[in-house]
Structures are given as structure tokens and as C-alpha cells.
Image 1 (cartoon, rainbow, N blue to C red):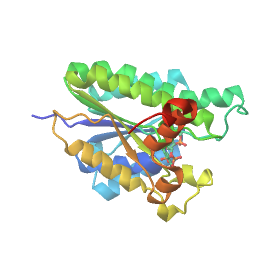
Image 2: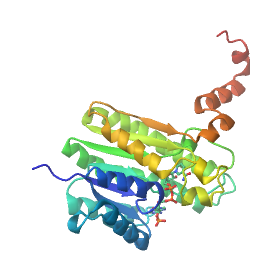
Image 3: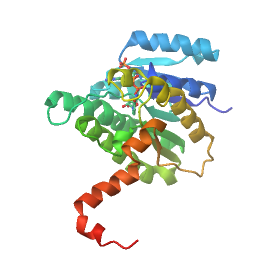
Amino acid sequence: MKETPVAVVTGGSRGIGRAVARELAGWGYRLVLVARSRENLEAARAELAKECGLAGVDQPDIEAADLADAGAVREAAAAVTARHGRVDLLFNGAGISVPGSFELDEPVFSRLLAVNLRAPFLLMREIVPLMLRQGRGRIINVASRNGKVAVAGLGGYSASKFGLMGLGEAAYRELAAKGVSVTTICPGWVNTDMAAGEGASLPPEAMIQPEDIARTVRWLLSLGPSVRVMDVLLECAGDVERRASVELAKLYALRDRHREEFDNLVL
Ligand SMILES: NC(=O)c1ccc[n+]([C@@H]2O[C@H](COP(=O)([O-])OP(=O)(O)OC[C@H]3O[C@@H](n4cnc5c(N)ncnc54)[C@H](OP(=O)(O)O)[C@@H]3O)[C@@H](O)[C@H]2O)c1
């Protein structure tokens, strides 16, 4: 008999993680939702159970853990593996955003790295060996558009997301031929509590919606086992022209650093 696949969704209580959890429930995954607030996790579990018709053992498990605490991350991973014995999909969606670069206090900078980069690293470190033993697995990390192009005033957040991009790319290359796919999703503004708290430059309806990320996950799941997708960049339509495309921004930065070579370029 085929075992029910298990998905661990960090940040599964709200925003992007919550929308992705609903999508995964629809694909028949047994869910484990991870976040700090037990109250929000319980509310998400009850809503998902109602929306997706899940009862008894099919209802999501919840793990209340502060992912800034390395010990708590390892305990959460150990609890999941002890209870389920397998993990088929790890969705690293939990994250925090704090504006600032050099004016950030060291503990705040460290917390950004701990939640946005070290926690996904630790979870991958605990869960990848299990996926390798299973012979298959999927890892989906949520970085950001700010993990591809840094903007002034967001140095701490960008550092954490660039780090996650690097970790994801290394894992993508290491694990691709071993049955484990690793994809990093890099969205612009997404209409969640995080964007509301950040004073986003776009109205909510002009942002990417959490369901768009869920649809991206749906697309990834629909691909055949021989396909790998390293990363997916999702931008808000109203942001693309103003902020220029990622590649163009990189090109401009290169041009500014190597003005002479660029001026002599014949295209
Ligand atoms: N919204 C955007 O515009 C945007 C754009 C690009 C990328 N992203 C990225 O997308 C991911 C999800 O963001 P979102 O917009 O859905 O944010 P959100 O609405 O603020 O939700 C964040 C989720 O992460 C959990 N979380 C936060 N800190 C945690 C911690 N220390 N330990 C455990 N769980 C924690 C939260 O639950 P608790 O608070 O209960 O812990 C919540 O479930 C993040 O990685 C974010 O950086 C967001």
C-alpha cells in the first residue's frame, strides 16, 4: 500500500505558508505546520480541516517552535521524523523581515539570519538524509526578490535571502541526481501580514497573492520526476518596470563597475 506523503510547512499558520498548506492538503499530503504561535497554528489546523474535509489523523499536526532557536528547530525535526518516519516535502516558508542595513543591532541581524537562513539549513540538514533514504523528496524554500537583487535599506533581510539562494543552489546541484528536488521561490511583494507591516509600495490588490505562490507550488508538483527547477522569480506587474528586471539591474551594476569595458563593447 502506498504511504501517505508527509509535508512539513514552516510558516504554515499564516500568509504564504498557510496558502501552500491548503494546496498540499489538496494533493493528499499529511501536513505538519510549524510556527511560533500555538494559537495561530490551532486556528490554521481547524480552518484547513474544515476547508479540505480532513478529520481524525488526517488533520494537520502542529509543532509550535521558535525557528530562531537552533535547539528548537532540531527538536521539531526530530518530533516529525519520530512521528511520521518520512518527509516527502519540506516547505521552508517561515521568515521575518526587518528593514535596515548597518544601523541594525547585532542581535536583530543575527535573528534575521537565524530564522531566514539557519533554520532552513538545519531543517534540510535533518531531513535530507531521510529523503535520500526514501530515494525521493522535494524541498521548496521561499527566499525573495530581495535574494536576487538587494535594495538600499534592506541589507540584513537581503543578506539572509541571498544566503538562502546560495544554500538552495548548492543543494539543488548536490541532490538533483539523487531523487531530491530543491527549488527556491523568489517573490516580490506578497499580500500578507508581512507586506502590510512593511509599508509596501503597492496596494494589496496589486501584489502577488498567497494563492499565486500556492499555484506555483502546484505547478512544481505537476512536473515529472526527471525535471528540476532551481528557482522561480515572481514579480508584481506594477513593480517590474519601475525597479527594472533582475538581469537588467545586474547589468547596470556591472556597467557601473566596468564603465570602460562597457563603453567599448560592440554588440
Ligand atoms: N510578504 C512578502 O511580501 C514576501 C515577499 C518575498 C518573500 N517573502 C517571504 O515569504 C515567507 C513567508 O512570508 P509571509 O509574507 O507569509 O509572512 P507572514 O504572513 O508574516 O507569515 C510568516 C510565517 O512565519 C512564521 N514565523 C515567523 N517567525 C518565526 C519563527 N521565529 N519561528 C517559527 N515561525 C516563524 C509565522 O508564524 P509565527 O509568527 O506564529 O511564528 C507565520 O506563520 C518569508 O520567508 C518571507 O521572507 C515574503
